[in-house]
Length: 150
Image 1: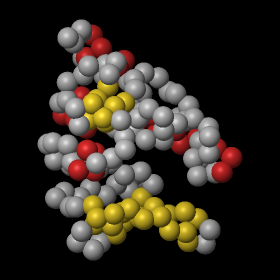
Image 2: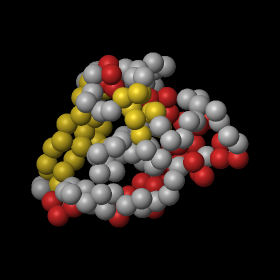
Image 3: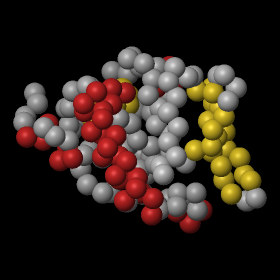
């Protein structure tokens, strides 16, 4: 079982890290007062850039987070990703559509499960280690890799 918790129309109020018996637990706090522990959170919000993005220190291009060809935010050692209409790839000019966002999500889920899960980013010895590259996102997107987008 995948243990996936989907919440619609729910505002995220904050993220907290706790240590229980020496184990790090990441907790999402929602505006309604509920909380959920998580290992990976995918948060989709609205149709325009949210203040979280526009007020962040992340590199932006027209209020979208700049990403490389692997959907990684530059200078984050492969630990921060953006996808969908909040992401701006300077090398792959894919349209900000739901279809592309879904394909990007499938690509990243495969990366997290097959490649990225092998690196413990919490372990102090891996602090300066860059997350390994699995492969370019564009070949994983169909039919976009079969055509030129201008």
